[in-house]
Length: 195
Image (cartoon, rainbow, N blue to C red):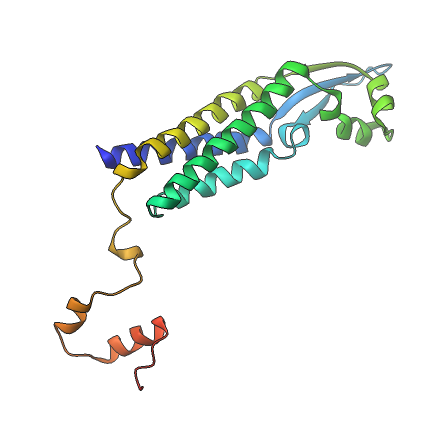
């Protein structure tokens, strides 16, 4: 059961981070400019919310690290997952509800060559959102839920296993004679076998 809890928490954070990363490349807002008959300008998620891609990558790295860290770092990483999920949710809800002009200012400036908050506001006739901000809100909530599940269940997760430990057991080393491989292992740990 504890392995299942760990797997579920890690998988939830991983999938939520991946969905948010995919969302950063998709069109979030379509902007129609005054006095033009051109097609609306498409504004990607990463342009509307500049922290979307970095926070999504952080969530992916966090999920991968959760599978091998010790108990204390599980709590820290779970807290980070909650914070990243909350930040992404707030940013995506703002875009979804307000459809702010500052989120499309870069695309408008690039298309028209005109800059400045008031100038861009005067140029924008309409801003419509696509489903991607809502999808990101759902992914952010899932990310935060994975962080909560990590914090709540981290004490029951099994350890990372022997393969990730760097210390050696004195019992295993004393049960057989010291050979050339052991000398190389001593060098890897920083011990001088000739001393």
